[in-house]
Image (cartoon, rainbow, N blue to C red; front, top):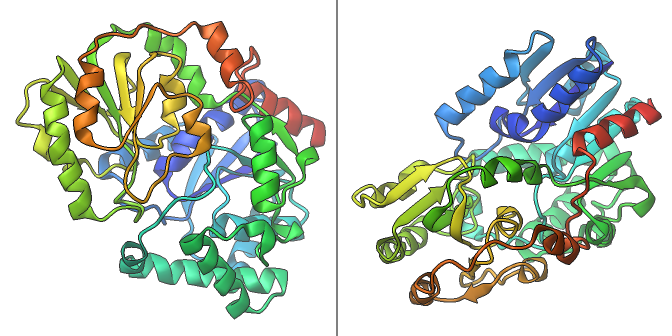
Length: 390
């Protein structure tokens, strides 16, 4: 069996798709995997990127190829030459759809993986997006080629994409909702997400299979760590992805120094693509730890990170700081203990002490509609479902 795994960068390939390939390898020693990076992630950390590359290529039968082009002819030629049994993608961005469409035209089964707790709309800053000129050009090229694949006028497709990115226009109600661009099977987290993907992108519920979020596999390991007396701030790529201006974010971090001073430990859990320099202002504080590992903490603080779901299984104190222009999604309101709108409101919550750990079985039932946690390893479910189809 041979598969192509596609994502924006080696960092995201290693995080989202490498565990799937590794599981397939344990089941089938002859399994071959080709990892394709589009090299389009914003602000990837150089060290994390290099570590991710090494994780992928250390496997004898796993290859890593960087394909920057969004030319439909070149992608088609690559897929024809490699002739994989299936294509696996961990996203549904415009360039993902291009690869899906071409693969389906070639008769290659395509699968997608939900890799976070998607929300209805991410509020981007137009100026921040437009400042990423090179990325904007590449995305425009992707849309141009996608228009050719689905035989739609480029200007019309581009118009629909801009309305989706800047105004939250539902893809289901636009020309981007094309059956050729729908994956054969999507692996999603719950019944809620079956409805979500159907309503937002027009996917057929019968082509979605529920799996446990892979982040939940970390829980036993995290629980085995010493519980830290303090607060973990779960970062997001707010500036890196154009959702917040840099100066505005740095002011927010300056205000968080007071939060850090109010607790015994303030642990900053970095996103894989976080620009670590944004957190340099904390280095003068002795009680601050900056890490990419997920800690076991009394309190968790974030904005609308998917990792809030993981945190909700570890603590009864998960605080969401709602930022101006970024309303808290309904799905996250279901799991948090507090929603605050100003930094000064965070400290009194932390001063209340340790709220304790949730009852795992009760939490499973509480979140079941949004995130299923069962005894079946998500990678086993993916493997068995793909084997049935092939």
